[in-house]
Length: 142
Image (cartoon, rainbow, N blue to C red):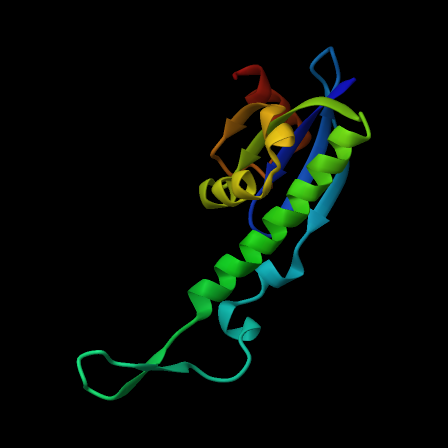
């Protein structure tokens, strides 16, 4: 069986296989278009009103950060499902995951325990735009 290498950030995940000789080949990619949007483009309506507990009346709350976090969690769930399917269909014997730090945390949260247990190495670094050759070099240094 082949090892799967996942290189991801909040908007894109690239999936590679690693051969026994160390060569890697890109086999798939997932893109979450909503994560590529600017936060303001994702919101519907204006800023929501929040009652000020100090009695100063109503102030506005910007939900763009929460919206982006929700999109990152949604994409993490999609990547986790891809990994789960690879595991249950016996396509891989383990995973090496390179991901932007916040996204790696989101991904870990969304993985089931069996799939999470198949992660051989997790690196909190965004290499999603690296070439296959650059990624292979990073794998050799692990």
